[in-house]
Image 1 (tube, helix red, strand yellow):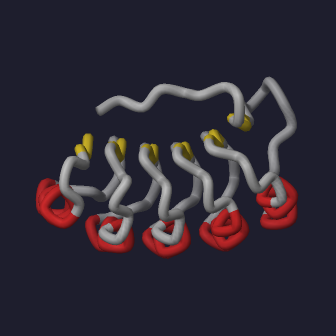
Image 2 (cartoon, one colour):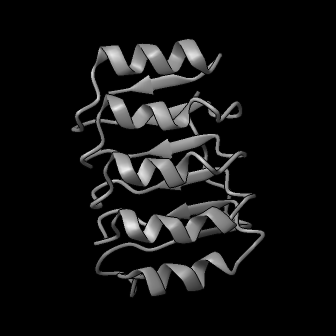
Image 3 (tube, one colour):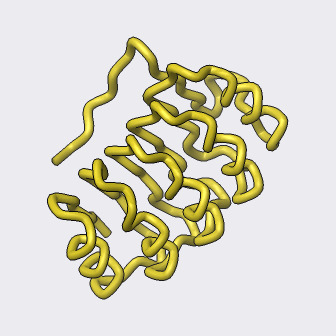
Length: 137
């Protein structure tokens, strides 16, 4: 399943087009938008520490953190987003071990993990644990 952007409750930060939250403080202000369902912050210097701020976004269905400094530690926080359906973690330092933090996300439909440390082993474990999820790596 491919995820489609919903624009009614989407917040995107794209380099060269806008200022973006470059710290935990910046992302904390975004986390106050409780009804946010889609957050796209690719190619920003967001790290694992900043991911702690997004756990308040319990309606979040789509998250794009491609090209950020997210690692397996950041996926621990992402794994708390129970409504998450689509996750893009391309060009991050995530590995198979990080995917283990996503096994409780029963709504998860698609994970894009190109240019990461994710292998067939980790993708297979996640697809076995979460029925219906596709992992592209």
